[in-house]
Image (cartoon, rainbow, N blue to C red):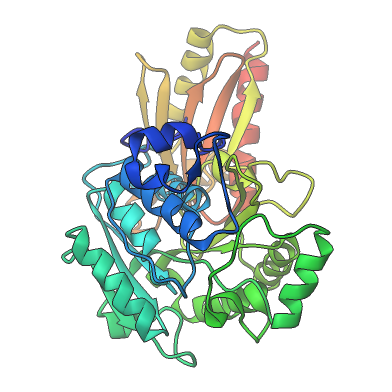
Length: 427
C-alpha cells in the first residue's frame, strides 16, 4: 500500500547528468566544461545556474537568486517535499493512503529564504497546495516575492516577515485556524567556529561553494537541533492546530537530540527518514503530530532501523499459515462481521477497512456486549470517538494490518493478535 504522488517526479536518486542538462538548457551549457562534462562547484555562478536550470527543466519554474544568499540544491529540497507529500497522503482522514488531487493542503514554510524554493516546488507539483512562508530577512523576502510573481503563484503563496524572537509558526498573524504541516530547513550551525569544526572534520574542502548569509547558516541558540527544539516547544502549545510539524536536519546527532525531546514530551506519533539523492549531501527529516492519524510504515522507517528509536510499526504482516488468499479473506471477514465494530470488505480486491470505538474483541468485551444485549441497550449508540481505525489487505505471503488511526498502541497490538489467532485457529 503506497502513496501515489501524482505527476511523475524527476529521478534525483541518480547523479544529475550534466551533459544532458546542457543540451536541454543553453544557459547551463555556458558553465559546463564541455570537454569533460564537469562543472566547477566552487564557482558561485555555476552553482546558481545549476539550480536555476534544474528548476526550469524539471518544474517549469523561473527563479532569480541573489549572489549573497543561499543557493539551494534542488535534489535534496525536492526529496523533502516528496516526503511531505507521502506523509500527508498516508495520514489523510479518507484512509486511502493515496494522493487525493482534490484535497486542499496548507503548508507553512519557516525561513523560506530568497529562493522560496519549497513553496515553489510544492505548488508546481500539487495544484491544490497552498503555502504561507516566513522569513526574518527583508532582502530574502523581496527576492522570494519576485520568484512568486514570476511563476504566477500570488494566489497560492503568501509571505510574512517574522520576528526573530516571535513565534516560528505564527498561525494567528497568518489568519490561519490550522495547517496541514509546518516545515523548515534551519541553520545547521551554532556559530562560525561550529562551521569551521564541521568543515575540518570532513578532512576535505567543501564540494560546493556556500553563498549563504550568516543568518541562513548560523542559529546561535544550538544550531539546527536548538532551532527544532524551539519548534517542539511551540508545538506543545499549538498541538492539533498543525497536523504535522516537520524539519530537515543536517547532523545525525541533531536527529537523536530531537527524538529524545519528543520522547520526553510523550509524543508517540512521529516519523523520521533519511533523504536520499544521488549527490554526496546527506540529510534527515523528522515529523511529529498530536493528531491520531498514522502514516504508513514506509514513511517513518526508511533506512534508520537500528540507528534511532522508531515509531511503532503502522503496518503489521501476519503469516497466512499456508492458507489461500480467498480462504483467509473469508475467515477474517466472518470474524470481524461478528464483532461490534464498523467493517467494510471488498471481495474483489480483498481489502477491508474498519473502525472500533473500543476493544470489542477480547473476552471481557464480548461478555460486556452480552450483558448489554440482555439489558436491551446498544453500546454503539454512545457518541464516542474512534479508538482504532484499520485496513486489512493481502500481500503475496502475508495478510497486512494497517494502523490508520488511534493513539493506543496496545489496542492496535491487541487487534493484530486477535487477527493472528483467528487465522491460526482456523488452520
